[in-house]
Amino acid sequence: MKNFALIGAAGYIAPRHMKAIKETGNNLVAAMDKNDSVGIIDSHFPDADFFVEFERFDRHVDLLKRKGTKIDYVAIASPNYLHDSHIRFALRNGAHAICEKPLVLNPWNIDGLKAVEEETGCRVYNILQLRLHPSIIALKEKVTRELLEAPDKIYDIDLTYLTSRGHWFFTSWKGDESKSGGIASNIGVHFYDMLSWIFGAVQHNEVHIKQLDTNAGYLELEHARVRWFLSVNYDYIPEAVKASGQRTYRSITVEGEEIEFSGGFTDLHTLSYKDVLGGGGFGLEEARNSIEIVQTIRAAELSTNSENYHAYVSRVKA
Image (cartoon, rainbow, N blue to C red; front, side, top):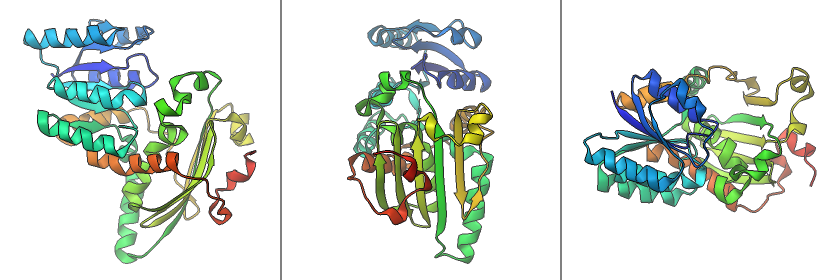
């Protein structure tokens, strides 16, 4: 049994980390969040110590270490802009870090964390759960087979991810680009990771829309042309989806064929933890491609190359 601490216990994704820790037979000994709406802990680890001030959490972890209770892993589900600092905290306390996406906001942060890994001997793992989704694994295997027969093949891909959010979203840290990295980082980074994992590194990156609630653009990968559209605006949800009462729409088409991956997300964090604890896991370098993509998107000037527009671009008002 390994001992875990959790930073970011009150967030949306935190219960998946608690569930993963429990289902892998391990123990959560301490958790921290500046918000105290963390009653969900009772369903998993009611005996875990909890703190709303980082300084007291830091002192507690140090006291545990001095008393011989080692924290083996720190799970990090805090706001995106704090990941880098919280990863460093974990490593310097002799614990491995398991961090939510995006791992960090900028590729140079990865270089800094590599130095801390070397100094401490501890590892950083990123939750890249789409790489463990059965439909995505099947797609990668199919593409790998096809590229063996046709090494120069270029796939045409459309990515549409609409996950509507209320007004709270823009008041929270998620609506602040300096803290979340913007829409592309906050809701798109795991798709960019998945696509570059399957279709290769980025050759060209265009951005067509950069609004607070919507981003759109075009990527050329080694083996794919990707038109992408991401939004938290309910207005862009297809009418048929709205009529069913849903507020999220995911679609990836490869060569016109829909890739169905709406289900199967529930247990991917547990699978991620099993992978890490079994000696696998996705480290700093695996995160680099997607972090470079989203950082380039943030810094890019808008392109008006309409030949590469996603079909939904025409729906967006200037």
